Every structure is written in C-alpha cells, then in structure tokens.
Amino acid sequence: MAVSYKPDEAMAKTLSLKLRLLLQTASAIVLVCVLGALLTQTLRQQMLSDRRDQVRSQVESAASLVALHEEEAATGLVPEAEARRRALQELARLRFDGDEYFFVLDRDLKWLAHGMNPKLVGKDMHSVRDPVGTDMGRLFDDTLRQGGGRGFAQYVWDKPGAAGPQPKLAYFSTSARWGWVVGTGLYLDDISAVLWKQVWGVAAQLLLFMAVTLSLGWWVYRSVMRELGAEPSEAAAIVREIAAGKLDRDIRLPKNGGDSLLAHIREMQGQLRRLVGEIIRDAEELGRLNADVVDGARMVADNSQGQSEGAAAMAASVEQLTVSISHIARHAMDAREVSQDSGQLGPVAAEHERNGVQGQGRSAAGRAGRRPDPADPGQREPGGPGGQRHLARAAGTGHRQPGHRPPRRADRPSGFGQRGGRHPGLAQRSAHRRGDRQSALVGGAVPGLSAVAQGLPPVCWRNCASAAASALEATE
Image (tube, rainbow, N blue to C red; front, side):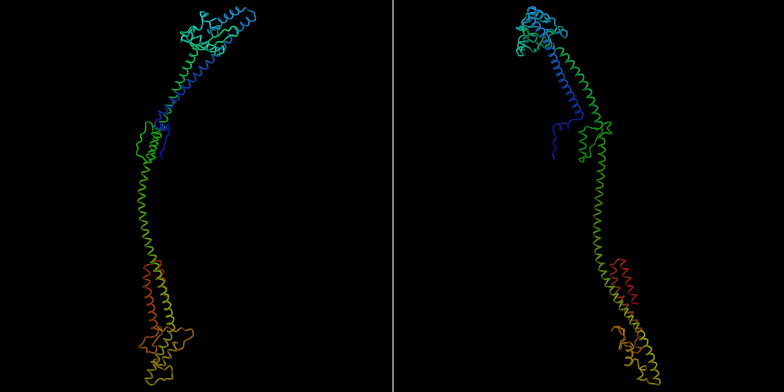
C-alpha cells in the first residue's frame, strides 16, 4: 500500500535536525521582530492619541479664555476693542510644555497673534506653504469645513532650537462671537525620538533573545545529537533497513557516541545478526533431524508391518497350539482309560497265568499216570473251549460286572487261551500297549508343538511346554 506524505511532513523528512532547529530559531526571531514592530506602531498610535488629547485640552482652555473676553465685551463691562486687545496679548504670552505656544486667526485666516513669530501677524495663511509644499490656507479651510469649525491638521513647521522643520500636529477651534480661530500644535519629533528609543530597546531585547535562543537551540541540538548519535532521518533509515532484514550495513559511530541511540542500534544489529545465524544453523539442524525422524518413522512403519505379520503368525500358531493341546488332552484321557483297564486286567492275567501253570502241571501228571477229569473245571485245558469260557467269564467278557466298562475292541485282549510259550502275558501286553499310547501321544503332539513354538514368544512356549509335561505326567 502506497504511503502519502503531506508537503510539510515530506520537507521535514528531508531537513536535518540542525537546519530544523535553525529554522525554528529564525521563526521565533522573526515572530519577535514582528511583535516588536506591532508594539512600536501601537506605541506611536498611543503617543499620537495622547498628543491629540493634550492639544485639544490646551486649545479648549485658550478658547474658554477668548469666550470670557467675548462675554465681557458683550455685557459692556469692557469695550470690545479693549477686550480683543487683552485677549490677543494673553494668548500671545500663553505657554505650555515649556516652549509650546498658541496662534490666533480671523475668519479670513489672517494671523492676529503668534506666540513664537510675531512677524506673521497680518499675513494671510493662504499665501504660506510649509517646507514640503503644503498650502496652509487650503489645509485649514478644509479642516474647518469638515470638522464644523474645529479639527486636527498635520504639517511641517519650523521648530525653535531645532536644526530644521519638524512634523507638527495642530488643533484649532472657532470662537462663537468674534469668529477667531484659536489653535496650537505639538511637534512630533519627540514622538519619533521616543519611538526610536523604544525601537532600540526592542532591538536590544531582540538581540538578547536571539543570542539566548541560538544558544539554547545549539545546546538542544548537541544534546539530541549526543543522545541519537546521528541525524534522526539517518537513524530512522537504519532502523527501517534492520526491520526489513538488511543487517549488513556498516554503522559508524561519532566521537563520544558510545552511549547513544545509534550505538544501541548497532549493538541490536549485531545481536540480530548473531541470532539470525543461530536460527539458520538451528533450521539446518532441524532439517537434518527431520530427515532422521522421517527415516525413523519409515523404519517404525516397516517394524509395525512386521509386527502385524508376526502377530498374525502368532495368532495362527496359538490356534494350532490350541488344537495340539486339545489332541494332547484327548490322548491323555485315552491313556488314562487304558491305564485303568490295565489295572483291572492285571489280577485276571495273574490268575490266568497261575491256572495255566497248574494246568501244565496236571497235564504232566496225567501223562505220567492219570487223565484229567473233564467234569472238573480246574482240570480242563486252558486252550480248550471250556478254559476259554472260563477265562472269558473271569475277564468279564461273557458276564459284565456292575460298574465295569468293557475295554474297547482295539484294546481287548485276544488269545488268552493260547499257551504261554506262544503268546506273551496279558500284563506284559497291557504295559506294551500303554507304552504305544504314550509314544503315539508324544509323537502326534510334539511335531505340532515344535511347529507352533517357532511363532510363539518364549513365555508362551514355556507355558505350552508346562502343559505338555502335565499331560505326559497324566499318561504315566
């Protein structure tokens, strides 16, 4: 967005602090001069007003004297000619403010009396001009006509004791009975002297004011420059460059400027430069760490995928382990049943062996001298039909005992009627079949456990091994 400046603001930005202070001082001096001129003019007007009042007052006093003589002549106390003579003598001798005098003119503006120059008596004012060429008769005629027989007039006239003619302010008034024009005037050269005296006083005060103002301005300038270290515009430009990120400018300090604003700006620039360098280095380090984090995240993702696959494999292994443990439990139950059946068949097998031994002894005895009695159950041959039925009844195959569970077909003993030399004993065969069951149990469960154990943690494998050991102990 464009920034617009006012003309005075733009000019203030281009001016140095010294020039601005000088302009302010000069403006103050010009202002004092203008005020002094106005004061002088006001004083002159005031003095003229005072002189006007003074002249009017003196003319009114002289006019009252003429009016007194006119009244004496009118009342007959004094003859009119005598009254006129007395009035003119008194006005010619009358003075005020030292050397100021009065003059008297008739209706035709001829001098009847003059306090300073008696030679003018009898002369017509219309034939007199002042040193600057003013027609005195016309001036007085115009003033009397415009003022109704009275008024002020300003002209140049000779002043006694002065080197030349001086400006003079006159006031005159017409008497009622005789029509005399009685007037007087004040020279204005004393007003000029007073005014010049006032001007010189104002000039002296102005010079003093200028000296004080310039000294104060110079002291302020030096103080400000000592605090800033440079022109405000230059310091502002440096700050704007720093704010814009330009930190490569060489800032030079003036003499005795170590504690100035420019010195602190320079220090701030150096600190910002170091801080930016550290930020850049940290950003580069952060970039490297970010790359490492990305690589670590990729590795974590790969490990997570591997762990997911391992978890799936472990779940499958756990399922297979569950199946294997179920098989182990079922085989363990079968083994327990076989052990129970073997325990029940042990006494029967022992009895069978004992009967077989006795039968063999009787056979040997019969062969030696007597045949066995077929009616005697104890003398029947073990391998005969009767011996087999007897063994079957003894084993419970023909007559089931209450609470007794017959063995399975695969586990039932066969060939109990055979001779002992051709078939092993029943107890030995039962023990052999129990060993076969344990071998089948272990042989069927261990490969499954081995396959499952490859996908299980060590804790799960130890638990499974403990379960398998318990099952094996149950089979024993």
